[in-house]
Picture 1 (cartoon, rainbow, N blue to C red):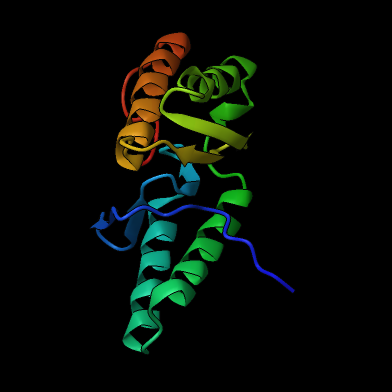
Picture 2 (cartoon, one colour; picture 1 turned 90 degrees about the vertical axis):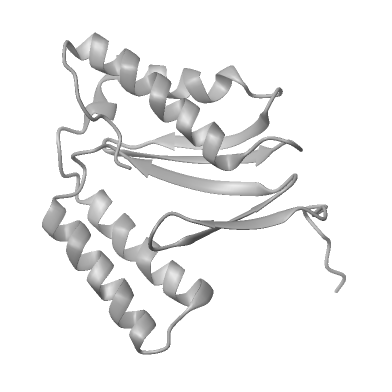
Length: 160
């Protein structure tokens, strides 16, 4: 059986860290992104998940295996539906989806998405020169401002 290369990786591959998980970035890569509402997980749950991650690393579990376990734990907790679940509101869900669509074809190719009640999943292929952090920041910044205005409130909307 012949295997096919799905992505033509360029020379530019970088790693950046946001505290507990490294983020790999490459030109023309496809990314599966999950981000959540600020109130989607109680702080005690977040603390427990991070402690489990550190314990896994202390036992020698590193790399993709540790990342997958962390991701599985986080997603299991998100599925429990904690918080206000503001993405159940049609106007907020539509705002979020329209924001992803805004730069589709210009900065990235939007492949798939799913707006859950308290978090979102997006699959994009970033175009050369686009940065993952900037794309996600622009989605979160814009939707937070507009959603808070629609809801008549201020403050944190998305989790860091």
